[in-house]
Length: 291
Image (cartoon, rainbow, N blue to C red; front, side, top):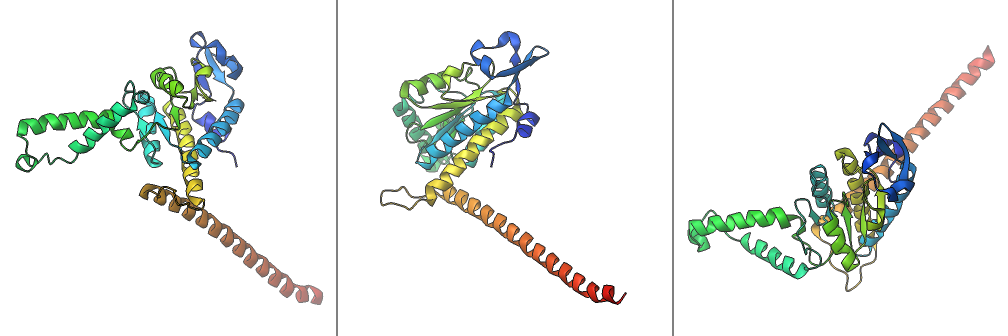
């Protein structure tokens, strides 16, 4: 079954590129036409590249990998935070901190500081052992850390791959990923460089609906990978399943069971209708013979 349809891509405006004067000639092969000074992206190619990116993300997660979602532009922040949280992956939606990947040891220290500050009781200065002024300063520091590091609080090592919305804006993240050999999956708009992305998806990275749809597809690939990971026979050194991963797996199994039940109900209903039709035909036969 297809991951997404061309109709869904059209409805979300994925086919709209930038103005023709703001394009990168390297994306020429992905451009279908020009309309009113706007490049139109070939959605047939987008479908093909979506399938490749989906398979890569799914297989990466199925083998124990982690995907870091990155999108700090206003149109991407909500989709990045919501979809990454839905599948339990780390994300950066506010600002990319220099050295987040290449100097991860320092970032890990700041994460530890954030978790220590979270243990303080800001409502009871006497219990915390700090004055009200000291607690106020620490609360401000905690709020700042939450804003910049909240999305990667559970990241214990560099990710296996990153998903990027707007590779031109997130060039710092891409540069760090390339230095460490981390594959980059991202939306390729007509003003971007396809050579920056290991798995480009030709599409619109400026429209909220387009960004939301493509980010949801990547998140669905992560969810499928998680389910595949935990359906394998557990080995002695396999990491225990986290609570959110268990809930995701159970939800997927419940959905599959519901679909199977629905198919069975349709089959039973069809059998009942067929049996009723046979009875009507049998009762009508003597009457027809009598006439």
